[in-house]
Length: 162
Image (cartoon, rainbow, N blue to C red; front, side, top):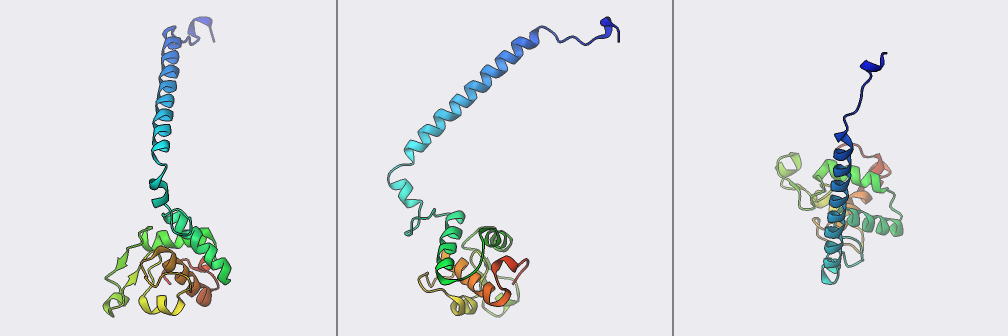
């Protein structure tokens, strides 16, 4: 390859790179400041409202972890991944989900909650120490896992509607 055909980077690229790096640094600095402000604003009553009575986060992650703690005490098998996978398939993580169109709904007993449990199953497999409300996330997960353990060995063995 001749020297004349060799690619040469234009001189202004150095300036563009310097401005890009400076711009990126400013963006990171801005994001850090915004994050720090948000973190300090999240103290006090806001952080307490974001957790359950047992101290777990009041979100899908916390509900699963609280259920797993109860399950461990009661000898109910299951893993975080098995529970999470089934919740996402059944309700997309919505604790107020209800199925009003399937055969159970046609019989007047719609599937409810994170793991879409019907009332008779929820009552039969309810775990002491959890709420009697099938829409309560922890009670729903724990009862569903108790049912899955009795029927399939574990929620981990459930890969479709159950």
